[in-house]
Length: 135
Image (cartoon, rainbow, N blue to C red; front, side, top):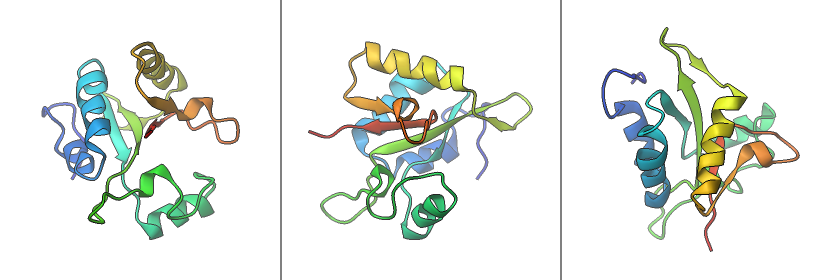
C-alpha cells in the first residue's frame, strides 16, 4: 500500500495507526495530519525482525523488545508508543527535512503533549521519531 497526499486519510498511515497506542494515533490525526497533510508514517510497531534490523543498521540504539516501537497492549496486540514520520513530496518521494520535524516538535512541546522528540536525543538525533511518554 502506497502513501498518498490525494486520499484523506492516507490508507497506509491509517493501517500503521492500527498498531499504535490510541493516544499517539489521535495526536497524529488531530495535531499533525490536520496541519501537515504531507506528513506520513514510516513506522509505528516494529516486530523482532524489523527492530533488530534497525539496530543492526544503526537506525536504533535498542534491540527488540526495548524500543517504544515494540510495545504491546495487555492482550499482546501491537501498541507502539512511537511513530517515525516522513514528508511526502509532490513528486511522490519521501523526504526527511530536519526543519519540518523540528516545527512539528515545537508545536508538540507548546501544546504540552506528554511526548518526546527524537531530535532531542543526544546519541542518535532521530528527528523523524515522536514518542508517547506513559506515566
